[in-house]
Every structure is written in C-alpha cells, then in structure tokens.
Image 1 (tube, rainbow, N blue to C red):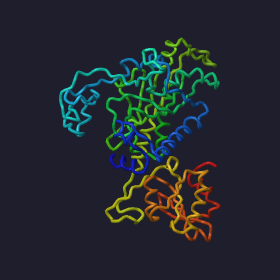
Image 2: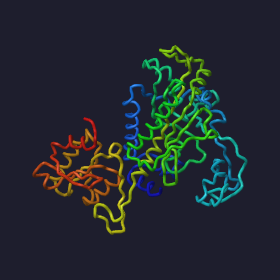
Image 3: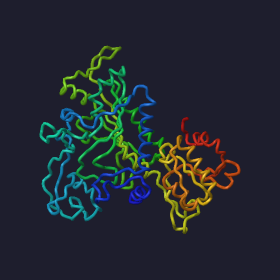
Amino acid sequence: MQKIISLSKRRGFIFPSSEIYGGFASCYDYGPLGVELKNNIKKQWWIFMVQENENIVGLDASILMSPKVWQASGHLTAGFADLLVECKKCHSRFRADYMEEGKFIGEGKTKEKNQCPLCGGKEFTKARQFNLMMKTFVGPVEDDASVSYLRAETCQGIYVNYKNVKDSMRLNIPFGIAQIGKAFRNEITPGNFIFRMREFEQMEMQFFVSPNNKEKIFNSWKEKRINWYLSLGIKKENLRFREHKKNELAHYAKRAVDIEYKFPWGWGEIEGIHDRGDWDLSNHSKYSGEDFNYIDPFSKKKFIPNIIETSAGVDRAFLALLCDSYQEIKGGRTKTTKSAKEAEIFLKLDKKIAPIKAAVLPLVKNNLEIVKKAREVYQALKPYFMCQYDKISSIGRRYRRQDEIGTPICLTIDFESLMHNDLTIRDRDTMKQERVKVKNLISYLREKLNEQS
C-alpha cells in the first residue's frame, strides 16, 4: 500500500489535502493524472448506465437540501450513527466496533483488542452514539432555523426528484435514475488512504421496479455490475460477492450484496447492490404529503415502487484499479535500469481509463528539426486524445516514466521521421514497435485505443 501511495504522489495522481499546512485528516486532492483517471472512470460508468440503457436517465441534484429530506430518510436518527469510544489517556476517539474486533492490531501501539493505536491505552469511555451527518448553516445567522447538512449520500436527491423525472421524461416502470456526485460523512475512523474518507464521490443508480419482479432484476444488476469492473481490466480473482446477513442489513434494506476487491490489507467493499423495498418513497411520501403511488398502465394496479440500488464509490474504484494494475518488474523491461536488482514500475491500466492515451517523444531534444516535428505531431493529436509531450532525459527513461503512469502508446519522432514523415509507435504492454505515417496517425490511434471518431 505504501508503494501505491508513494507512486500516487510522485506521479501526480493524489496529493494529501492542505499538505503545506500539515495536511487535513483523511482528505485528498486529485492531481493532474488523478483527475484524468477519475474522470475516465466516471465516463465509463455513465456510458454503461445512461448511454447504453434507454430506460435510465441522469440527474445532478443539489448537495444542500431541506433538512426535512434527512429527517424523512432516517439520517438524523440513531439509524445513521456509529458507536464511539474515547481513550481516557490521550482522548483520541474510535469506532467501538473497530476496537472490539481488533481492527487496529499491528497498527501503532496496538497489540491486542480494545487498545489505543496512538498511545497504547486500554481504558475507554462508555460507548455513545455519534451521528455521521456533517452539519452546516444556510444564511447569515447560525441558529436552529438555518441548520442544513452536507448530503451523506447522493440517492436522496434522486428519491425527492422521482416524480419530476418520471413525468418530464414520460417514463414507465421499470426505469432508473443515475447520478455521480460528492457525499460527506463525519467518519470517526477513516483510513486506508482514499478507501474511507470524509469527503468522497459516489456513482449511484436507483432502479424503480414493481415488487413482483424485483428479485430477477436484483440478480441481473448484480451480474452486470461485477462484469463492468472486469471490463475495466480488474482481475477476476480479485473480485467477489458478499451477501449481507440479516443482522447486518441497514434499516431500509430487504437484501444487500457487496462487490468486494482484494486490497493489500484484505477484502473491502467497492460497490453495494441493495433491495431497498418501498421504504424510501413511502417515507418521503409520508413526510412531504406527495403521492408517490404508481399506476401500472396495463394491470391498472396501484403501488409504491420498490428500489434496486447500485451504489459504487468512485474513489474506491480508483484505488482498486491502481492496485490491480500496479506491477513491479525486477531488472526492468526497457533495459535502462542501473542494475539487475532495480525494479521498474508498470501500471497496466485499461486503455479506456488510462489518464494519458499517447505520449509524444522527440528522440533528442537538441535537434531543432526533430523537436519541431514532434511539436507538430503533439498539436495535431491534442484535439482528439489526451496526450503528453516529454523531452526530458533519455528516451529509455521517458518510456519508463510513461509505463509508470499507464500510458498505452508512445510515439517517438527520430531522424528517419524527417525523411519519411513517419514515426515509431511503441505499445506499452507488448513493447513492440512499428512505424506509422503521420498522415495515418489519428485513424491508427483511434483503432488502437478503440475510440470513436
């Protein structure tokens, strides 16, 4: 995990937030390459969910909503709270269930269950409820009348807009509403890099169904979602389903299945598929007075729609893809390592999500004609692909740099390019090289990267 964190900072994927002021606990900033990778993940999810399904539409709901939304959803009650304990010695606070399960054993000064990882103390206060909602105030006066909350999940914005979307888009059940957006939870014990943060991004789709056929739809989405991760190149052996036991289910859930990834520290959830029943729409109907009943156009039966939810974490998918694509090759791939013991880092990211699609490399930086030609190629490609121009260091070191950030294709302009108006294309995975005419380059790259014109 430390190698992933080190690479992330060194190559501009992820930086600690507010680092010049000592950082800000469990908050991170996505750097130039990180934001490209993250956007590519979201783009692939949107294509999968919205573009390829005629009965799923998109939404971008407000982060700030009426506090009544959170009252109706149950987020302001004990149902959305963790039990917190405080170390009597150093006054640090932890989730009670983490202490009881011994999740901190091996971290810091923890050698056994119920021991503080920071000071080794074994005495804690009595467990008490800690609500995870992040409170804020709307307007110039900070009083009870101006209290609002940063949303704890994106799905509530979908539920309160259910009727608006259904009527404006003329939709019949079954149909879905998809949304990507930030959510905020005041986690007691965040950690594992970007796996558990207080500010995170979700990709959620709420599928509104009849209660009669929801089991079949649930199982269908379960398979579709794990296949999506496989389509991005994640190894099958690193993914699994985990069905929640009855005593694990959230208050709203009839059934829940997690898709888990095998991270360096163990299995962790990257997505949940949930049967939420009619709990959400029934509660919002009750609290708002809005009628959310649906009348089937064929049977004329009236019912509150049930919801099958697929809820994925953008940040967790990002981390899983980094971990899964990370490789170290002893002795190197490019024969430019200083010694046989030195290892080259290689990110085998799927080309659909690679932050940089092609790198343009002049063979030498002190030949004006080669540099000029390379710049021309770079400028010609920029409108079509996310490219990077790199002339620093030897060509071998530049190849290594691009391998390290997962760039699938490198384009080298050399002396022969000046005579024949072509260049060398190097494939990241096979390291095979071939020469292609500059005039054919855009069509060649589109085919190679499977991108549409």
